Every structure is written in structure tokens, then in C-alpha cells.
Image 1: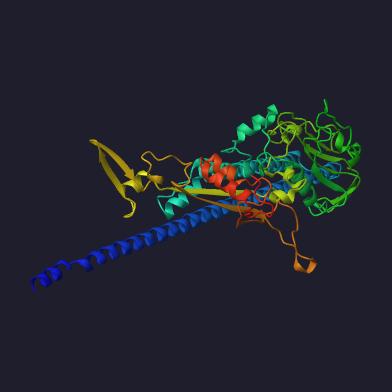
Image 2: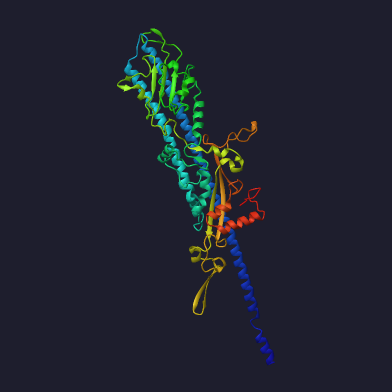
Length: 512
């Protein structure tokens, strides 16, 4: 019976061995599940953060563009009011001239005070219109320098979501190229004006033209169209407007001998750098304070305000012989009507921030009609100091001793490398790329077919924001953007996908 007891005793512990192996397998399965789940959760997190950042950039850009459009419209309103005031000066001049030829002449001091006040108002209106351009530059510089440059806005959003996420400054290249042509910050007013004077304004491929990009012509046309020619002055025999600039390089300034010579067919022969108004070709009737009616043939009335640099103004009315009216209250009337300093002579029109109309030519539909696409690029470094200090339970740091030498094997680093590589390593860095689009949409009523009313511009505030694919336009090269930010292996992986037939957001592929 003794051998049986020995056999029974030797069988003890078999279940424990099987249990240990099963528990080890179960532990590995749990750790794998946790690892895959954590990576999936982190992948969703970083992509959501990139999407939020891209959309926020698009919203910031759209709001900036809308603010610029509103201020451009305000500039137009000021210039319309300026022309209207000029018209009133001309109209008042004709009335004053007629009164001087009547039995009840108006005191010269009273007229001079009114004329000077009106001239000051024209100067103030022009100055305020110019101040709006400075304000446009300020908000444009804030967009480029504070939000887009170095992915500043993207980095702030990423840190709020998870401090572990990072936004490399080089990831801003695409957004800056789309908005400003690649400049990391806008230009100051003085810098731009110096560039205009020296003819050294840099060309831009971006959507924004800080000094107009043809916007001056558009705003001038909008202003002249807004004049209405009747509601500003409410009379058929008068008019107001701005010098066309057709003779801006005239070496001389033409003083007309009479207002009758100042008809609309000769306006292009003026310096082209002024605002003007005229009233002539009609007899003026009125009633004196004592009730005596009068009709005076004061048919000459003209006012032109030029730049401060030239002092070549004219104020002509029938009370005195033209050209000019000499001095009133010890003030030369011509100089009284001088405007502020021109931005770049000749020209009184204030500059405005404009949309790059050159992007609307050719195959504009292949480039989103110049509407800026803004990339947000985030990454998570799995071998960062923070990760190594607090690794996941399954990412262990082992230390082996061989021949009295210690060797580290860091399971948190890719392939257990002792010295992990940098951003180029696709196994070390998790990267997410997203794109937002600032787009212009002024809808046409459905009753007339729907669709767009007009192409993108900075004259109406119809800019909006949306998320879009990082691909689709002819200049969308996300692999290049990844490469420029240092993620070379990620870029190469994307190129290989493209070569294998992956199309992403483009029907033809990225063609990297």
C-alpha cells in the first residue's frame, strides 16, 4: 500500500500549473485588449482634436474675411458720403454766388465758415476711410500671426484636449500659403506703403492681398454705382465723383477758366487724383429775407479736392472770376479744400484689403476658387519623456546585465530601440491631419434656380467654414505637408497608399 501513497503524493500541484498557464494567457489577453483599446481611443482622440482645430482655423479665417468685407463696405459708404458732401459744397457755392448777385448779398464771413466746415467734413470722411484700412490690416495680421502661424490656434486646442498632443510649427505651411502666400505674419501699414512707393510689393499666391489686388477698382466702381447720381444731391444739373486716374501722370495741372469748360467729357484730363462736384447750366432763383424774389445767372460752380502733397484744388463759383476764389477770412479757399495725404501719389482713394482675384481665373474649380483650405497637424510621441516616466503597464522598461554591463530594452520605444529616432519614425509618432475650408457662399434664391450669386470676394460678408478632405484641389499635397513637418515615414506611407490605388478625397488620387 505504500507505493500507492507515493503515487498519490506525486500528483499534487498539477492543477496549479495549468491554472498558472491559463492565468498568464488570460493576463496577456487582457493586456492586449487594453492596449488595442487604448490605441484606438487615442487614435479617435487625436483625430477629433485635429478636426476641431482645422474647423476652428476655418471659422477664424471666415470671420476675419467677413470683418474685412464689412469694413470695405464701410469705406465705400464713407467715400459716397464724401462725394455727397462735395456735391453740397458745389451746390452751396452756386447758391451763394447767385445770392451775391442779388439785392440781398450774403455776408462773406458766414459763407466762409460754412464752406470751411464742409471742407473739414470731407477731410474727416477720407481719413476715417483710411483708418479702416489700418483696422483691416490689424485683424488680418492677427489671423496670420496669432492664429495660423506656427499652428498657434491648433496647439492651444490640442492642449485643452490632451496636454500630450503636440502641433509642430512647420505644420502651418499649408494654411499660410493658402491665406497669405506663405508669409508667417502680415505687414504693417508703414511697411506696405513703403513697398508701394518703391514698387517692391511682394507677389502672393494666397487668397488675401493686403493692398488691394484689384480691389481698388472694385471699390471705386461700387462707390460710383452707389452714388446714384440723384439721391446724393437730388438734382439733375449736378454731379459728384472721383478722378478716374486716366491722366494721373499728367505733368501739369489744368486750371479751367470757367465752370462751363468743366464738362464731364474733360474730367479725364484732370489730374485723376481728386474728388470733385459741379453745378452749372441753370439759373438760380431765390427770395431775399425781405421777400424780394431774384433770379441770378450764376451758372458756374465747381469744387475739386486734391491731395495735401499737391495743393492743386479748385473752388470756382460765379461771385468771383475763376480760377479759384482767392482768400476768404485770410484762408486760401483752394487750399482749404485739400484732402489728407495720399497713400501713394497720385491717388486719394484709401487702400483696402482685397481678395486675390487672380485665383478666379483659369481652372479655378480645381483650386476651390481660391478659397483657403487650412490644415491642422497633430502628433503624439510614444517615446516622449512623459510617456517614459509613466508608461502603460504593458509597456515595460527592462534592464539586462551582460558581462557586468547594463543594457536597456524599452518596450515603450519602437522596436525596443535604446535611442529612439525622431519625428520621422512612423512607429514612434501617431499623427493626425485634418482640413477646414473658409468658403464664400451667397445663395441665389431657389425660385431662380439656386446656386451661387457671385464668386468669392471681400465686398460682401458671406464667408463660412466647414470641414473638408485634405485632398481634392490641385495643390493639396498632404504627403508634402507631412514631409515638411518632419514626418517623412508617414509621408512615404501615404505615397505608397496612393500608388497602390488609395484615392482619399480625390477621384484621381493625390499624385504625390
